Length: 156
Image: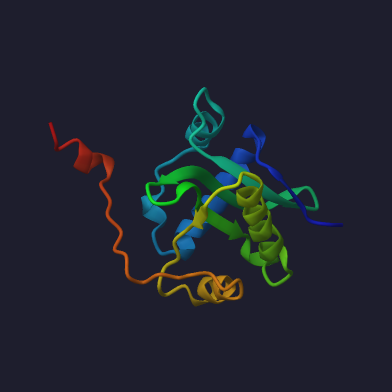
């Protein structure tokens, strides 16, 4: 059976949620996951979708996903931001990640986007090596800034 890459649907979100939790566990932050299947459905398929997904399906199971959205660079224009990308551990090493990642690249090309961005943890050597095979620019110069909802609520 072949790997199928297709846009995610509402009915895929429980599987995507399971993969999100697996990713959080791998990244040593399972307690940080606050989103729910219902929120994924609303945020991805509601009136104003905030993201899109591609899912990797093998033998009728969702074994991977990519969650991304359109961003904007004041210097370059429209960009694709790859928020998360994962192939389930049991299916790694078969080239499935390559197929899914190249589908994301193709999406950016088809939309004539100016850049594709993502982050990788500095200790995640398997992911870094994966991206290096694509000659990706991995920039250690920028420092991430962030406010969580609790931080935003402190401001009037």
